[in-house]
Image (tube, rainbow, N blue to C red; front, side):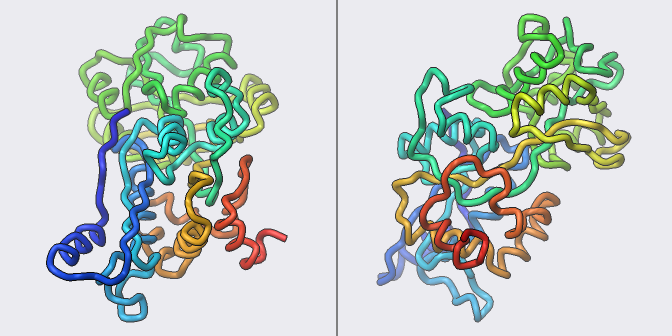
Length: 334
């Protein structure tokens, strides 16, 4: 699996400090898998890594410096998404990552997309973050107005290892379609947009908090349409798979696009069970401090809906003991 690494500003500062100074405080690294650069995991993961980092040599929080975990350098890494992040956590290539709630549940229980892989029993939750809307984006003028219109069309379902691919298959199934009924491509939203612009692709799926950068760019440049995902098919889908929820992308979220019915899953911050309890406690505490609140509000539109009061919503896997300790102190866990 390919990862693109983004070091926080603090991490760069730490490297400079360590190159010239003997720092008594131990430096710890915390790798967070995100998603493709055109989605929402990537920028949100970057904000979180910035918020929880506090490299050796940083100014104290009360002096306008970092309010993260002392000695911690968090590193946000671009990846293929939920499934890839969980696999990397299991192998030890990552300490933590972003995952859709459905994929995390399947991994922990060894069901769904993980049915042939076995249970990932060492997966734990830090927090539920925000709802992720399933976008079905169509090329303007492609004649795609419903999911059933995808039959015979050129459609990207996202890369193998992504949660988007899993959900795209379930949605096609809900409407009586399969991958064999479309001319399927398996690429990330960035390359998919290029193909849409070149009339080489008719539609693509992306699961991300709105507004997501890749869709906004396409809508404002070449134009795009969002396809409604609703009706009795969706009612049956939600009844069968409880991790889906009804959702609406408001009119005007993307240039020229009206209100669109769809479904959503939860974006969650997950971690390996073997990661030190004290460290995860401090990471969770840093995630919800006042300074992080400011960074989330300013960093991305979806950052505003990442709230402590919804931190445990839809969490279908065990909390990490470090996170559970924090939420018990905060009164969210009895």
